[in-house]
Amino acid sequence: MCDSRGMRIATWNVNSITARLPRVLAWLRSAQPDVVCLQELKCGADAFPRDEITELGYDIACHGSGRWNGVAVLSRIGLDDLTRGLIDEPSYDGEIEPRAIGATCDGVRVWSVYVPNGREPGHPHYAYKLRWLAALRETVLAENEPGRPFAVLGDFNIAPTDDDVWDISAFTGSTHVTEPERDALAALREAGLSDVVPRPLKYDYPYTYWDYRQLAFPKNRGMRIDLVYASGAFADAVTDAYVDREERKGKGASDHAPVVMDLAPHSTP
DNA sequence: ATGCCTCTGGGGCAGAGA
Image 1: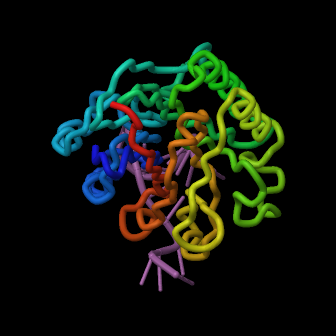
Image 2: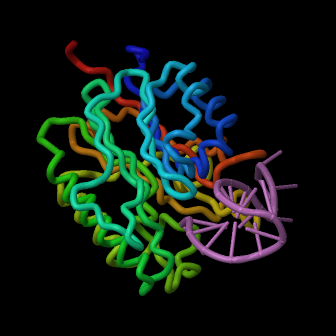
């Protein structure tokens, strides 16, 4: 890592690591993150394009099973104490899905998470989403020790406030904005985490996701659903946080943009 | 306003995404 800059940590739902590989590699070269949490790999652990990413100096911890879901942590500053899955993680359709992986990178504990979508309120997937968030809270309570830099980063599939969607009236009866989902975020805050809100590089709101359809990105019809929930020690070290919306542009883009944070260097060696 | 959806598995089109 670059000592004068401190540690750069990012989270990005890539919507298939194999389809996104050229853009991910180019972005790693230009953005120079030290730690990256990835979601929606859509590939098994053995199909993960390890060599190309390893060549750029990253160690890789991957938790994937195939066609859907899949999470990973990349780090070029150490990758230790790997944990795949949450405490008491619920199953869906009889399967425990690869949606969470924890790792410690140079003393900073991170979890890369892909929270279930929920599909629609009343759907079994929605109940699963809430159960999954309860298991995430349990895991946070078990791991978030005072003074430790700790954060859960990823695609939460929840807009924390009405300002985090482009038009709240378009979300009547939809997931992502319901009270039980927002209550689950409040429970994470009660467990000692806070929402690190990035700055937008354009317009007023730091959206992180824009649908592929109907010119949602150029019209800025977005949502802030990729979140960083951080302990005090982590949040206090953040010197900058922003959404890299440039990565949502052009051919072969994911429908999510990376959220990037810079953390102050360790005060003592 | 940087573009009117894209991904996987499988080999057509269904299912998921949010």
